[in-house]
Image (tube, rainbow, N blue to C red; front, side, top):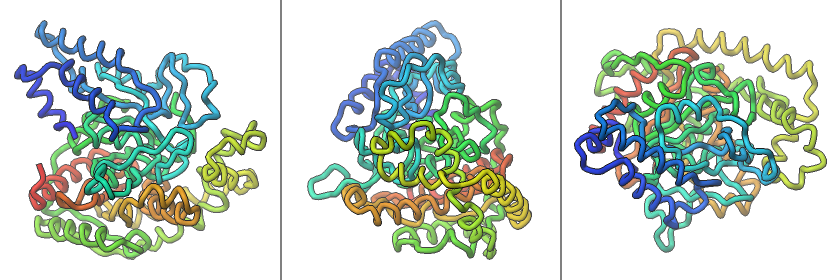
Length: 456
């Protein structure tokens, strides 16, 4: 990974290298075999122009924002003027180029970011695994021994697969993505990154190809909490006023329902170690049954918001073109076909009631604490070959992260594994609108974990 934004900016200001020098290094990494299938399209020339502009500003002694001239990537979900938004699908190969940037992309450009390219994703963002049979699946570079002979490639997580790999490989300081059921936090957890799912209303969804209008969130992943705060401030309607929060006295709810089930041993060890670290630093970790979490699967049936709303997006051509979809994506979209208007309205009514009851259950707590996902990254080949294994992994990967989307809340995934271990994420989840408080707590949690694990 690249250094954090503050360190990079200090080195640039000291003249240790230029923005264009940094971009040369980044593009060399993007050309390397480890970056295969990371990009749907590259924007080398435009990125170089942004880097040169930042160098010119620096020579002139003019102010530069925190992202000015620094490499970022954009998920293939977002409109960029003059480029085709494929959304990871061959069905959109002939779609007309976008007439304008999505607001989040436009804001990154206005900040002076050097957009390196459009990153790979699950077709139409409909999976937490990250496989793409059309354009290839980037391998997880954070898995111990990744790229070495005899080490099977592992999934990066999805749907923002290429986004995560671009940051993990040091191609980008930040990656713009989306999160409908965990698509930022799952790949962040599996690739050893920080992924922040903001409250949905913070960032406009215009110009982002829709999966679920009820659940889609525009957000980003980076290497640390401070960088997530910075990037969120650039793409959202207004920056957050994040105040540092001490761990001493922080109240975290540990759920007794759903989110701690079926943890693989390595995940359980890393999570328990993290809880011990936080408790020793003064955080109050309180077990709560939170039976409400066990209701989600029933309340979100039949089909669920994602399937119903995705079918609405694709209904005009779904029957005629189904054979051209990723079959596993088509299978999930088809679940929405038979859902009636009355059932869809009932989905919203049940969710509204559940949000109220869950917020009440979390009253007095700063956040819900859990593993981001209960399993380590499975092998790519195994999930490509076995449909049952794929859907089992997909369900486990989405299970914990979906809570924040269903809650219309905010959540962040932080690495909690030690150096040399397989990546494991710790997640903090809070009701909607508590983004600043959540990020303040996350910064304190990150600092404690870094100190305890000897990181950075």
